[in-house]
Length: 115
Image (tube, rainbow, N blue to C red; front, top):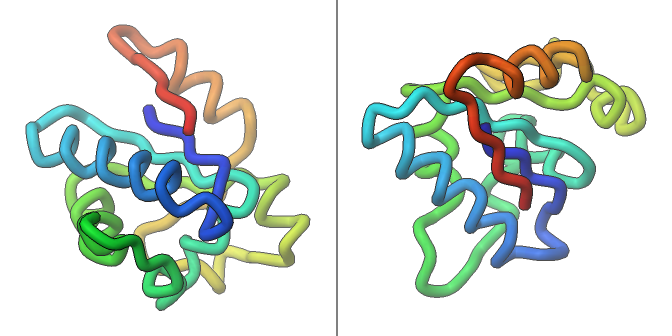
């Protein structure tokens, strides 16, 4: 599990979270990326293009890799605060709450990283 709490206001930390999740997914590790706080906006189509970080893999490519090989979830409360609904998010992205996060975090073999 990788939980990212920042958006384009902290581009290095944000990109690092996506990079770690994408690398794990590409390595065959089951990955669950959680978007919380300002990172919730990246769940909307086209929003990953809003983050540009020199010398880093482009966020849209990382996001696509994670979606293809893992799961991407937007925090339900964070989505509600931003008026983001199921119809707003990119295909393959889900909105779920704390109970789902806890269940994933407590699954056997799970490890969590927070950015």
